[in-house]
Amino acid sequence: MALEGRRLPTDYENSSKDALPDSKLEERNPSDEALDTENGTRSRFGFGNSDKHPGGRIAPVLSHLRGYDFGSDTDSTDILGKQIELEAGNDIQYRTCSWPKASGISLRRRQWHALTGFHQTAALLFSEYICLAIMSFPYSYSVLGLVPGLILTVVIAGLVLYTSLVVWEFCLRHPEVRDVCDIGQMLFWGKTWAWYATAVMFVLNNTFIQALHVLVTAKYLNTITSHSQCTIVFAVIGTVICFFFSLPRTFSALAKLATFSAFFTFLSVLLAAIFAAIEAHPAGYNPDPNYVNPKTGLPGGEPIVTALPVKGTTFVAGMNAFLNISYTFIGQITLPSFIAEMRNPKDFPKALWAVTIAEVFIFGIVGAVVYAYTGNQYNTAPAFGSLGNDIYKKVSFSFMIPTLIFLGVLYASVSARFIFFRIFEGTRHKSSHTVAGWSAWAGILAATWVLAFIIAEVIPFFSDLLSLMSSLFDSFFGFIFWGLAYIRMRRVDGGVTWLKEQSLYGYSMLALNIVIILIGLFFLGAGTYTSVQSIITDTEGSVGGVFTCADNGL
Image 1 (cartoon, rainbow, N blue to C red):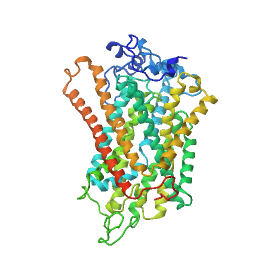
Image 2 (cartoon, rainbow, N blue to C red; image 1 turned 90 degrees about the vertical axis):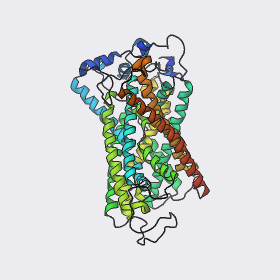
Image 3 (tube, rainbow, N blue to C red; image 1 turned 45 degrees about the horizontal axis):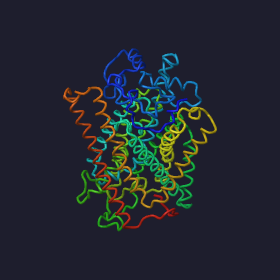
Image 4 (cartoon, one colour; image 1 turned 180 degrees about the vertical axis):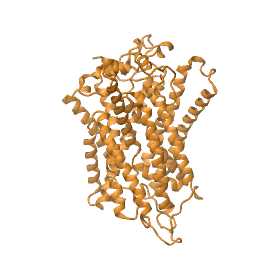
């Protein structure tokens, strides 16, 4: 058991044992040699090509990761192989992949393990992205116009796909990283403050998403029961249910729930689109085109569908709609945690491409169809509230139950393992069924859910505050980190003269990643401004109370 396994992150020491020359940082792992021999290929990392070598490290293993499970890059240790080898006899295995040189199992068995590992990761990605947020796309399209809305859907999906592949490449080069906090410290030259800053953003982001799902679960129960109980009671019920579903310790166990969640979410949005098309009129319909809704200021008549933004659309309204689309796609914060438990991390792009293609089609088609039948006047977010038939609304919303629970569960698990690993790294409690280990795991989860419940109930303008947090955090986790990661990895690949020796393609990719960093800064600036303006507007009117029993149903 190594003491370093429990150390908090510290700045890279200046001693010679931690300062590695470029040749050492770029040294190939023995496992890579084996993989290249088996695949019959040896070439540079390509865009999503899992058979190519990813390249050299940008920095040594972080000091707090130089522990029992990870080995050291100073002696060319096969970090990934050692993780799997040391976990082989454990009760709880996190990196649950088959490693040919360590286990000696047959090729057919290895292929099966790789296939199941791919399916489990795909299930986690589908459950994260195919979620309730789909039902806010009709509202975004009504503000932006259908054509710009669909174009932005495709563009944002492409950017997130690309940056996710950068995350994957970084994790292949540094297989010891467990989460985005480790990556944040490595990107900013191993500085301690970078780890702590990233950790604060990481935990806050995840806890606010948990709080959102406490609120949405209460919203569903209010809707389906016609507000039969105080909303606080429903929020407590949602919190307790989510806590118990969070208890599995590995992502492979959660993947079974993820598959269930993604399937029923697809049914839910499909039914909502079908019901919107077949019902006579949307909710709130008024046949008089001269009628003006006193609450929204929108006219009556048949649903109005516009290809472009309507005249008078404000910058704040347009940015809110754009950010709503963007935040639905941005989920790179969890990807390092997923990759850290894959049997074969090189299979990750298969899951990523499958999810991205599904996202574009489902988000675009469902958003456009529901918008077409509800128009600018009658749509709500989520769009279940636009359904005029109460049975249609309750049936379609009910199929969303698994994702209302599971997505909060997923983020709770990511936060809990982040804390749990820091406490028990290098001890038997991390990988064995001990009373102390399970008690600590349950206690950490309980703390995150209690905090999420309090946040959801105490903050009267929670949705606007969530948008503000997303603007502050997703600018880094969605864009800035990965543009910087690309540049630092290319610097390692090319050496000190890498800028002078770039090809046209190299300069183009460099320009793309600089643009990605600028996009992140735009999210940080304009997104924060928009969110603050929304908070100011809401607080000028009526806001919800603290721990209120008021009905929040659709």
